[in-house]
Image 1 (tube, rainbow, N blue to C red):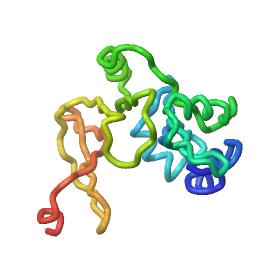
Image 2: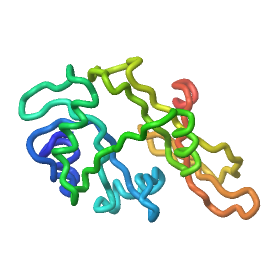
Image 3: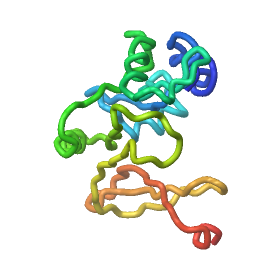
Length: 182
């Protein structure tokens, strides 16, 4: 994200970082408990942009200086000084501790997952062993109410509670090219 470009021009509420600074981060919507709510994000993108926050993980450049060869912990230290306390941009705090214990806390809170990065790592685009994304998920059975499909866009399975047949949400349907061309 760069102040004045990218997401900040689409979401004026995110134009609060000082200076041009491309960031690595993620747009989120917070629920009443202050936790990221992925289902609410989809609605907020098109309907309630004032509910969106940008959670910044990393700082890549600052005022024309490439910071990608600096250690992650040094880049993050600079980043904390750029984000105002009343900003729609939030700093992704480090959670020190043992990864399995942190994962279980994240999973119990119903969060999407976590990203683990080496503190001394330099920023590199593409696959690397310096960071790892671990997703949490729940498996449940639902009745299929139908499929919402628009040409050129991913299909959504519309799902219901098996007992009540009450709509509970939707999920992306991912199929290979042969099946999707039918």
